Length: 227
Image (cartoon, rainbow, N blue to C red; front, side):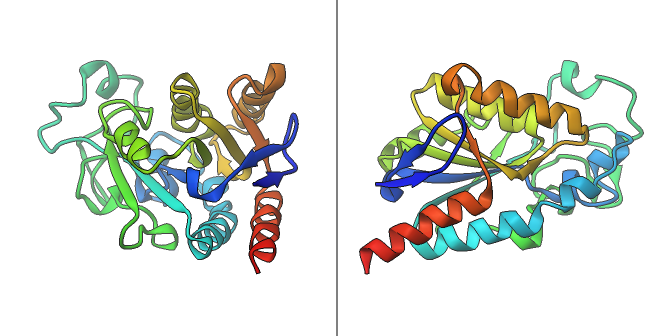
């Protein structure tokens, strides 16, 4: 059993029954010229978390843990993108429109791919999801159950939208969830701060939060114990 010095209290997990879930670290959200920037956002805060995310991913892989990647992606004909989603707001580019990296949030397009620093490795789960949550209209629940997963460690973007939605979906399904504070980000700093507070409020009502360093320390301790 590994223990992370998390908030509001220690998060305990066993590696074989825990998955690292990386939410939507795709070019459309993280890189200049993508959907996030077309909405008028500064993508630099999202790019800033890449080193911490990469360090966690490398350590998790080295430990032999299960890894899940998600992409917010729609079919080319947009049949899984309701008007209520596509027509919201007044962006410069809408879902399905042609942008500098191909059609926005369409599966298979260059901008829809996960950033190279975190690209899925062979054998890792990579899912396209048409909604904000990782469980909606995907086989994630079945894939986790097949592997005996009971605990989830989350990182990715954006904190208050797809990350929080996925954590709440997981919580409702009985998973124990940890969110890595420096491995998630929002275009709006106040939204990230509020989400972290909401997640761990009332005795971890949705889940725990901790830093990547705290998780890496727990993984290191577990590796030392096995030696």
